[in-house]
Length: 162
Length: 280
Image 1 (cartoon, each protein chain N blue to C red):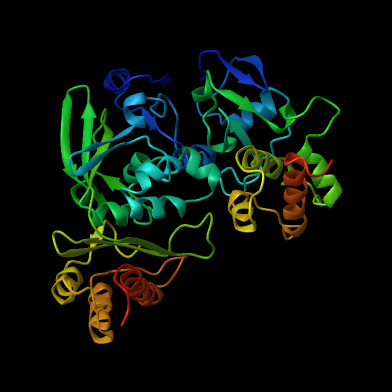
Image 2 (cartoon, chains in turn cyan, purple):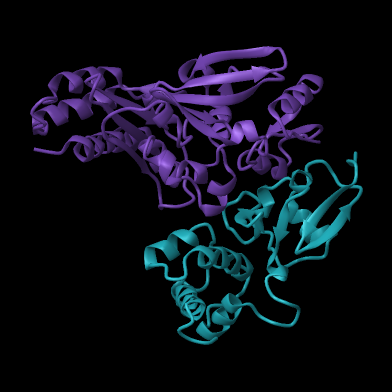
């Protein structure tokens, strides 16, 4: 049984979703219907944060958003945070700090850190750790991730260039 | 699929589809949907209903819309009125979960481990339920009838939750394996009502439904130095924690043993009391 077609606004573009299944998560629609595989699919229960996207600006797990309920909301995925072929400041900081190992958690972490730095360009260590507490990384031990946050934060404060 | 834009809209949709899934934040519901445990036919999404997203002070109470998110509960103007609720909200999940999960959803899920449940129990929260045929009110302990079982009827939703604004310190404590993304092994809320000269204690994850430690409350209420403000003696604290432990009926499960839970709830009771009224 499919549901009536509906439209989602992803990275500033409107997409028509037809022949959707009523229980489809936003993560599934992004990856399998819209060809946006940047948001990763792992736990499907909000535990790992690898599917993190911005919904009307706020960070959420796209696996826990019913796709058809997001009509009329602004969805931003990791594909939408910098023009094609370029890196956002947070992504560049990840490269510079060596904060990527297997890379699976990276898009979710980048989204969570982007949200943090939008409201606080000088976060202390505990604030950073709380902001990324919903994003599991099993490789880095978070040390270089936090280093990347500090690099990106310094750049947003205008103290350094990335 | 109905994306309700008003309370009336939501009630009408539920009246025509009484078996519809009510979707607020989705942090519990979508886990079951993703697992394939929950057949999805009609969904009524209530997360964007303005009447459910706000809160207001009504005399000596606060009326909280059921679709307030945990992030909303953390905002300073509300947190200052309901500090224990804010502490509990901050212990939920992660920023991602707190941005979507709702107060009403926590109650409607009816899990013994729901983080706001012990706080709402301690505050004697009253639920306002609504359907197309009218409204009714219910106390939290009448509403949650067992593990993930509630008195909510088909076609009905939680509209608001009323809690008193109390004069006195409030504490929420929770035991889990880490600070974030943890389902409580034991939780406890302790609120002091200076004008009523009572201490109220709500307990989580130690019984099938919301639980108050009434004997412990009566005991400590009678042994606090309400006028002088001197902290209770070690003997009084010991007796208080003993009575809190005695109120519980925990089970063994994959998150912890009954024995551990009894021990931990006593530790939390002593800690919350010391934070609220000091220690001798």
